[in-house]
Length: 320
Ligand SMILES: *[C@@H]1O[C@H](CO)[C@@H](O)[C@H](O)[C@H]1NC(C)=O
Ligand SMILES: *[C@@H]1O[C@H](CO)[C@@H](O)[C@H](O)[C@H]1NC(C)=O
Ligand SMILES: *[C@@H]1O[C@H](CO)[C@@H](O)[C@H](O)[C@H]1NC(C)=O
Ligand SMILES: *[C@@H]1O[C@H](CO)[C@@H](O)[C@H](O)[C@H]1NC(C)=O
Ligand SMILES: *[C@@H]1O[C@H](CO)[C@@H](O)[C@H](O)[C@H]1NC(C)=O
Image (cartoon, rainbow, N blue to C red; front, side, top):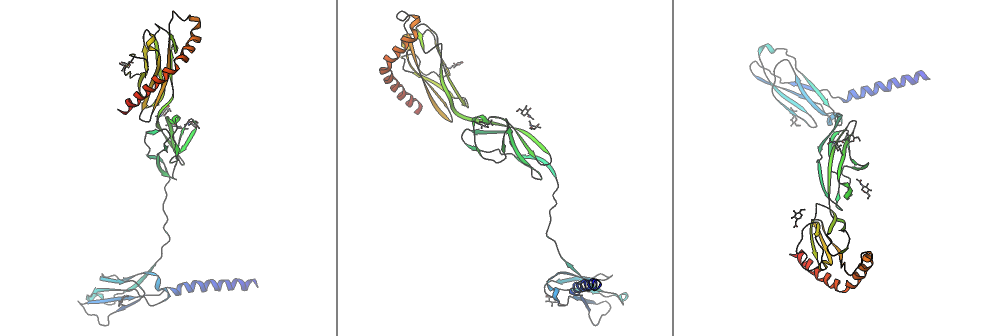
């Protein structure tokens, strides 16, 4: 039983091989009937009609002598015709025809392992707080590297979108990794409108006449903002353009509201501070804080009118 099985397998295999060979048509070469010395003669090769018609075939006439003007046709019945200049030593020259069947696989690409290399990764990035941004840091290499930018163990993938925060300012370590790793520093600068503002007053917002008073407009903003001061106190200052306002030897007429206007290209802030000036002859030093509160309250009515006028003035100032 087993033996006959093996035999039938062998027969099938042989048949299959034969069939494959049978499919390949044998080209037919033909020569002209009458060939004369010093004349040209045509040599033709055709592929007989067969089931293999659709194969991509290249026909070639093979001989020791030189053939000229070969013209080949592809298609259902491919053929080739060449001419030969006949000389008398060509008697019994052998000519044959060769058919080459061409088949082609799908193309495969050669991928060479290459270490990462930054191609387009700027050293500096300028962002504005609140805007949507991403690290633009391209690297080439194979396998394609993964690019990630890290600061304080906060990591952003290349191209990952996020809303820019103030604390993103600083140096990021951007690395490109496949089987190898390269890295570079990318300095991020984040600009933002005035933040965390207040007016610091030294020594205090309630001062005795004759004291030296300092008002400092404390604002966090990038780029550094422009400052300007306005006040309801008469004839104290016109247009003071500094962060710090010094008033030497404070007088009663310095009492009032002080406004600090802060502006950079991303925003504007107005800060307000009330200053109370105490008369040392009326107020005993121990009662300074108590009385200053009282006098502040008394002043409230007229002060608001003054505040309004200053704000109108300020808006005009910003308009022009
Ligand atoms: C060769 O093939 C072309 C196109 O199929 C045909 O026109 C031409 O007659 C053929 N020549 C010969 C010699 O069979
Ligand atoms: C910035 O601060 C936020 C919280 O406000 C935090 O989640 C983030 O990780 C910080 N970013 C960096 C780069 O330190
Ligand atoms: C980035 O960090 C890696 C390790 O975390 C370090 O090897 C590399 O030197 C750093 N690159 C830069 C430019 O600081
Ligand atoms: C990268 O920045 C770090 C500070 O964040 C600094 O210590 C280091 O020297 C810088 N490396 C390069 C290559 O500039
Ligand atoms: C601002 O202060 C600087 C010194 O800190 C001074 O040189 C400048 O004149 C001041 N500007 C105004 C407008 O007062």
